[in-house]
Length: 294
View (spheres, rainbow, N blue to C red):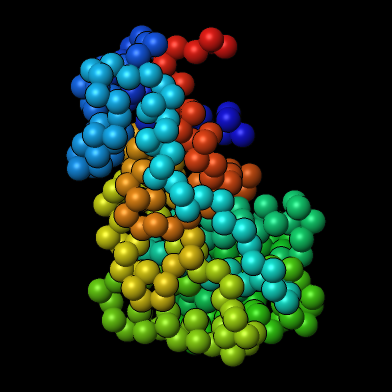
């Protein structure tokens, strides 16, 4: 796991090494400030982090870790126990990596021995239906789909109904990549949520927002807009391996007060890993501080 997180934070760690080429026992606050800013932690949050550190000019790892951990008090949510299937509705703008994330999540479920079914409710783009179908075939997972332009709510209803009939454990539903200022698409998303509840009371059981990690803190406003539309339950950060903005997760956690449940660290179906705040912080701090274990 540490290896995968380190892979995902590779470019961020490279930026840190440029700021502080040699590891230290104690880090100067000015240096730490530069490291955080270069990692895409917003300046206001950097100032807050520095404020809560001990008053000395140089600080130890344990003090930095204590402050950084405080931003992840919403970590590690549990999937609620419910009558099968557990329904995940996956939302986010085009290009964030939504469809690939769905495939990775389905693969994780399948590897754990669970039965999964996909619903291709992104009927806005034919390419989205084709992409999800290719993944379903590759992973040997059933999919409910229709043609481009058909009612996405009907696909969601059929997917959940099929999941109930087949006794699957998890239904994962894709949605069109919509921008928060597109009122018609926002209304469509609200309709999908309503129809999910008609197909199975309480569904969707979890609404997952996929955010593009390469956007850094600029994804926060996007996330707030989605949260206002339908209420987001959890966050997945994609493409973490493709950016030096790994520090943005502190701001995302602080501003949204929503759990980050997974991070994407590559293109393969196994490259979606559960987010662990301790491992994330440890990986960053290990590039700054000298440790007894090397």
